Length: 182
Ligand SMILES: [Fe+2]
Ligand SMILES: [Fe+2]
Image 1 (tube, rainbow, N blue to C red):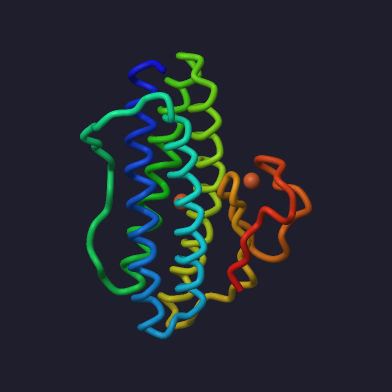
Image 2 (cartoon, rainbow, N blue to C red):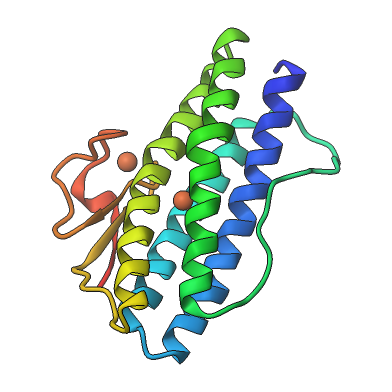
């Protein structure tokens, strides 16, 4: 694999791994503040970021070794409103800068596995940003967010509120490939 695509996959793996853990921590904070649906949203999206990290790692299967991995990563444990603001900021960075730039490089280098892994992540991050924005609005109004069952595609990380789709609109996985957070 070309070095730049591999470096981007490693960075994205680092970023997604940390997002996975960060959202777990923030889920606990939300539960403690009496926002069970926000906690469930953080837990579901944490699972989606695990899917992205796993896909990036698998795309790198031929590029073993030890590397220092720089990744953009937010730190801090605030109130749930502040944590949601941090989550939105991180998702928007991925949507507006990181994944479009990484995809462009991977396409130019004809690294198909990297392009697909970045494409899967980017599609889900757009949904995450919107779900977090809705949650922040509710929390800032002093309420928990209204949230149906959340389904996460274990192949691509697509995150959908309500019934699991018959086919994943991003990766075409079947209904059985969705994990429910009810
Ligand atoms: Fe995300
Ligand atoms: Fe999917």
